[in-house]
Length: 234
Image 1 (cartoon, one colour):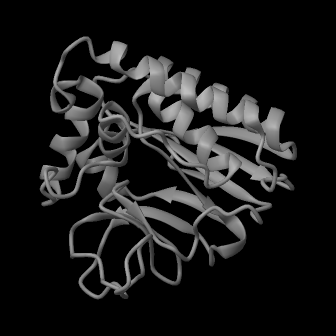
Image 2 (image 1 turned 180 degrees about the vertical axis):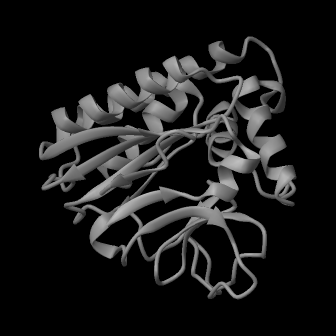
């Protein structure tokens, strides 16, 4: 099983960098108060990272709004995961507990203002591709939605042999491969586009890997995908 970024993505976004944390034999079942404390601290510190700049003008968020426009998604209607998360927190929402992995990656997302997500490897079928949707993608149930809908041709998606596992790049993931408290094997991804530097991505991915190792145990490894290294074994 591999995670592969297709040529069509790098043709349009040549400076894309993905940080990947690969997890095996973890324990995601514990609700540890230390994790919630870390998340609350990241929430409390978020407004200071904007310094009065509107959310859509922060460079870490503006770059995703531009990327969405490139593949035909209106960022006002379909905000990137990092824009949605930061808006919720800046509006006073305290993020609820889902499971340890989700709280840990939300902490890193807020801390560095980067999109972070993850999937349960045991629910993945064959390889995972970051690619553009074709004309005949199967309909998928997204988190929180009651109706299955197919990706639009040309939108960027993560997909496996069954279908899309995340639509509009990092907008919303499929219910089928979501992380749960029963998750034992998974991969987490941090995504970056200019002007975010590779150093920021590397710092964030190491923090994420270290925190997962500390609180969930298991075997943890890190990889980076870019135009020179387009796939990694999961």
